[in-house]
Structures are given as structure tokens and as C-alpha cells.
Image (cartoon, protein in one colour):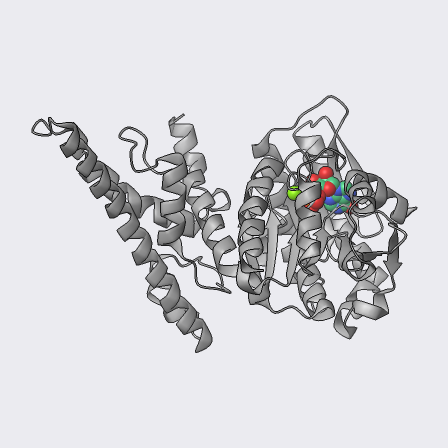
Length: 418
Ligand code: IMP
Ligand code: MG
């Protein structure tokens, strides 16, 4: 689909990832300029083979170049001036890198599997590059991995579904714990009433797997669930149940200051709710508005679906109203952190965000940014996994099957390292 509509839509910043677009553009130069296999003078299969080798080498060369740009950017980060790196000049929206990325190696692995360089009509795509970045990140972090955090919906299980007993992810997560790695589910889903049993029922398949796993009590205790982005922490006990961890145990003073400021929380949620309700009315949406202690959401009515564009409109307009409120002279205190995101089929505004969630876990479990990996599906600027990029390594997957593939790569390396 390359309609004018799509081109215009793609021009919107919130639908783009600067680094991936940059790599795609750079690779496409090679794709556009060379098609040796189609040249009239290449008649023998030996010539065709060497044309393929050259095509692969040209792409690999590009990936080596990007790898070097990232290394230079990391050097500038260390000097406290990332904005002066060459990569920053080329991709002004580029984020922090917590490790170098072996992109050439990752490209060659991906090419061996998906024959990217043999394609003559379809250039390297956004998804090809996203997967290459994931492979590079897995290779880079495996030797030092200490904490891995997973988003819930669409990363571990399908949207709104529970963790199934027969999910292939059960064995892989058990394997991660058996390597003494800390594992946490960091989800937006925020439950306050009967919280333990609600999270337990969403993770039922995984908890069942733990019972059969033979993991030691210490290894079981390395599994946590952080709900409501960063608001409710639970630890797995040796009884295979989740236990609430009191906030004073893991929340730093400055987080507790805002997380207990109910007047300001209500003020922020009131503004968000008013805008969401206005969107429902003005766009005549088949949706209901749900208010919780630390969240407000727009959820489609049973059987209805709301278009991605409309969900984005609700997110961006609500973000706009909240930021305008927080910057107004009447708001004296430091602005309350919030996360307003498109969950794929719904929109939520949560108090707090996953960046704070991951940073608290890093401090609590003693893991540095370069030892932490967050796996999630929402890495556009309207998504709720995006915020974690500032403080840890990330894998951007699009469904639980891709989480499976990334964890197979990771556990293979961990097994070899043993
Ligand atoms: P995550 O992908 O695990 O972060 O979960 C995001 C999804 O959780 C949203 O798209 C919602 O469908 C669901 N959800 C349920 N309760 C809440 C809440 O209180 N805040 C945000 N999302 C929620
Ligand atoms: Mg998700």
C-alpha cells in the first residue's frame, strides 16, 4: 500500500523510528543502485553466485558503518555530549545506547535465515531492520545480562489474554531464572482490588510451569511482577504465589512523594478523563471510559474495534492537554509523571511510567543499564514501552512469537557461555 494517504500518514513523527528509518534508507541506496544478477552479461550461475556474495557484502558494509556510528555516539555519551555525535546529526531523535551493537554480525545471521540480500524486488524493510537490531542487542547483552523485564500484553500473551500453560515462553522464562537472572513482568495493567489473584490469573500458565520447574527458592524469588507501569510490585514466593512488596521497600523517597499525592493524581486524571470523554462524544466512538485510582482508560465496547488513527488522536490530544496543564503557572510542584499510550485496541493514561518502573527495579535488584533488557511491543512514541529506552537495552517485538525467537537466541548464547 503506497497511497498518498499512507505516505502522508508515514510522515507523522509518532509513526516513525528515526534510527530504523535511517538504516533502511542507507541500505536502500545499495538496493537501488545495484542489481548485478539482472545484468545482461551475467550469464553463468557462477557469476550469479558471486553477484549475490557482493550484494551481501555491500549490505554488511553498511551495517559495519552504522555500528561505527553507534560506537562513536557511545563515546560522546560518555563525555556527556551525545548531541555532538555524527549519528545525532544524522538522526536527531536517536536515543541512548547502553551497549555497542554488533550489527554486521546480526545482519549476516539474519541474512542466512531470511536471505535479505538475495531479494531483487523487495528492499530491506522496517521489520527486517527491527529484527536485526534485536539480534544485535541479544548478542551484546548476553554476557552481562542481570535483569530482563517483559511487557505483558502482546509480548508474553495476546492482547487481553492470559499466559497459557502451553505457551513456549514458559520453558524459556524458567531457563532464564535457572541462569540466576532476575525476571520481571512490567505491565501497564493495574489492579488494586484482589490484586495478587488478578495478576496470578493473568500469569496462570507461567505460575503453573514454575511449580513443575525444579527451580530453587532463591531462583523463584528472582521473579517479580510490576503492575500499573511502576505502582504495584509483587514477588514470587516458594509457595508459587505472588506476594505484595510494600512500597517503602523498593520505592525511593521522590517516587513516594508523588505516588501518594492523591490531590495532584486526581487533578491529572480529571483532565485526562475530560479530554477522553470529549473525544468519545465528538468522534462518536463505541467506547467506555474506565477510571481507576491511578489510571483512566478508553476501552471499546464489547464487539467494537476502534481504528489506530482514532486511538492515536485520543493519545496525542490527551498528551497535549496534560502537558499544557502541567506547564501552566498554576501548577507549582514538579510535574507528575504520567504515561498516555495507545495499547493497540484501547487508550490509557497511567500515573507513572515504565522508565520509572525499570529504574526502580534496577536499583532494587542491583542491575546497571547495560545489564538490563526490556522486551516490549510498544516502542513508537505513542506506546508505553518507549520510555524504557532511556535507561536500559531494549528488544522491540511485535507478538509473543517474536519474543519466543529472541529468547531462543538469548538462551542459546547463555547456554554456550555456561
Ligand atoms: P502491557 O502491554 O502489559 O503494558 O499492558 C497494556 C494493556 O493493559 C493495555 O492496552 C490495556 O488493555 C490493559 N490494561 C488493563 N488495566 C490497565 C491500566 O490500569 N492501565 C493501562 N493499561 C491497562
Ligand atoms: Mg504491550
